[in-house]
Length: 276
Image (tube, rainbow, N blue to C red; front, side, top):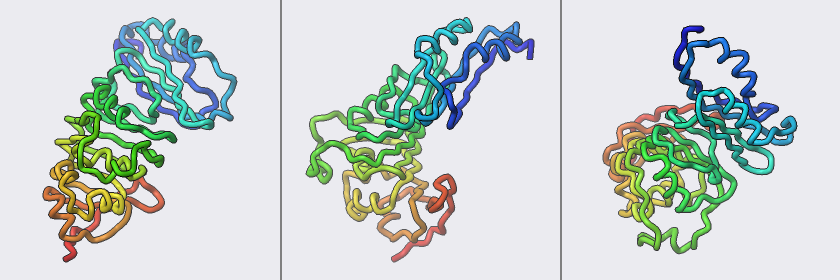
């Protein structure tokens, strides 16, 4: 690889005992052996249990080690999920990759124009303003996975209301796939109510069936109908036959799937049987 001129590295590691891939080691063992290399873009992240970590380097020390590699500006972030877990992100600027995973509501974003897949999770509520920022920071977002079991800090009567509150409607212009399988029902409301969010291109929706039934008021609610209109692939948390009302509410529906009870990454197709 001594003739390599350009290198793009995307690396995600889990359960490490240190936050970062050492910049000096990366240069001495790999990059120094590529004398023709003039462009090195990278994104690296490590998921860590904090109590297992070696003594931490400072952010400045880590960033300086990568800056000394001499391939451009570097950003270094420690994103704490709770008191026990954190994700370390380090990447070159400008960010050129299409995936960004395991961010929390505290993750500082300054525009990720190339990102099309995003996963976010947290143990504190994510409010309307958070999703508004994400629609601006990730303008080309196509796939969004959200995990948050904590209810939003909003008034209960607002959950049932079809009227617009004082906030602006969020638009995800390019979003085609939305995963809400592991969320509090507030986030299903956040995304399906057109008075809160507009998702004109949504074609794949993954969520808990009981939450869907509740939010759509047994598939009769008009204010959630528009964001469901183009969904042709519906993935729910268990196997069941859909009623005729479901197919009428999702006029574009072609495929019904359910996730494995023990492994959420396994998805099975359910026969499309209309139950009268």
